[in-house]
Length: 192
Length: 192
Image (spheres, rainbow over the protein chains, first blue to last red):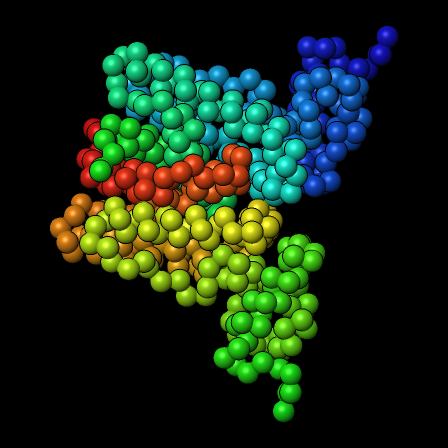
């Protein structure tokens, strides 16, 4: 009965361990779903039930889990956004994320079908967290707007820039500063 | 006397033509300084006098020239930043930039020496344009702060996110909206 094969509840963990081990050994380009299945001792079908591509699998394992949830309600828009920004910084600056994200981004630009799946599975999932935070704020009577995609780009973009385009280090206090920036932008009427 | 070799003043143009042609034929990974020198009919020394690496050469040719200048003084911080953001959008969304930037970013993360040169030659040059715009604003008495790196990340980051991480399209009005966001952030005192 598949002795040595992890049971269903352990597949996520076995796959995550295998992905990390193979990334450390040979990097992102060389990693394959076949290789991960063999290393994890799970069937490829079990992997494809969870993720539709290598890119989504790797992103889920090394950046965030398959079902990210919004930070706990802090009672203010600025603090909620700062908590989310802090989490994005943590996720993107981990050693495996640094190993994977630039190569993954290059794959996206070369493969429109992959980019569409990444958009649906990752970007839209993150934007939904922002939308939840904006909903909470509006329910409290805060000025929050409803453009989750823009607020998401205001947080993710500068973090990605510092980490992957401009030197590799995030300046101290960045999460709170980005949250303050987003709040200032949302509360400000457009100039004519 | 080197018939067929472009004269010094034409080297930039010959190299630019060769880079674009080779990118269109075989993409960023396959491009080499040797190949560009041969195609352009210029000496490798002439290329290395201008750029210290393939990445810097390609970036200069397909994204911005070797010596970017700040947009003309519009008389307001917001309009100056919007003009710069509009230019960044134009630079990053051109067909060659789309072909090159993700692979170039992946190279940076794998090569610290290259990343350091990219930082000095490209990121610091763009930050200097932002610093010039902030200087102008302060001279007019506008609230502008002096953190050019942060303002640069506020412009470049969301643009990069929309173009290369989240679907490939920049929403209408983004440049002005980012400029307004930066101005709102700079004019707002930090919360305690």
